[in-house]
Length: 238
Picture (spheres, one colour):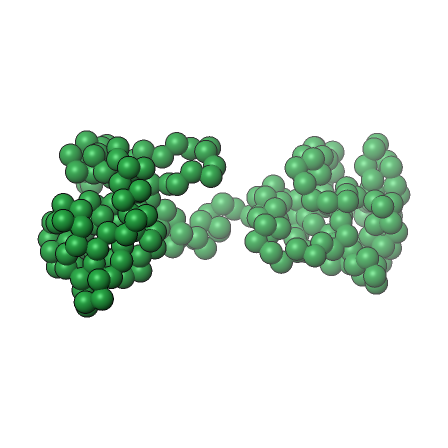
């Protein structure tokens, strides 16, 4: 219950000299110390509604926290993403242990600049841009789930598959690379991520597997675009 969060958090802040009370202007826990005012919204879970309510409290008080019982997934990526939102909004997070009722300030109510997170994710940002630029067909539909994406890797694999078929369905890695123009032909064939290829038993010699024949039909339009270069061109650099 949310009310079970009230006393542990109240006692914690009273230890720092705050004068506290509940349900002041609909604020679950309101406190003051000198000229400083703090609001704590007590919630069962950290969801959009709780974040929205806490953000509205920022209009009325100097500092705002959300108080919840310590979740099992506190250190998982999904929950850390929620904390990121709180940091960007300058909303603090307090977690209370259900067993011991001990208090932990997980996130301070300080606005974290976006540039801080952008610096930490420079590698991911670069990888995102690289993947976008390497994709030739740009044929995916956003917001669709459960469909096979045309990634740059899949585009290369399709070119390798098509080249292998043009070579009669069986050829050497060198022959396939020369016809497809795909630099990473060898790892694509060896890793066989989609199950489209099969080794003939001779080193560096591959043939088309049954799933590969099905893929040719499934991705017929993508292959056509790749072979005829009828896809959006990347803007020239510089």
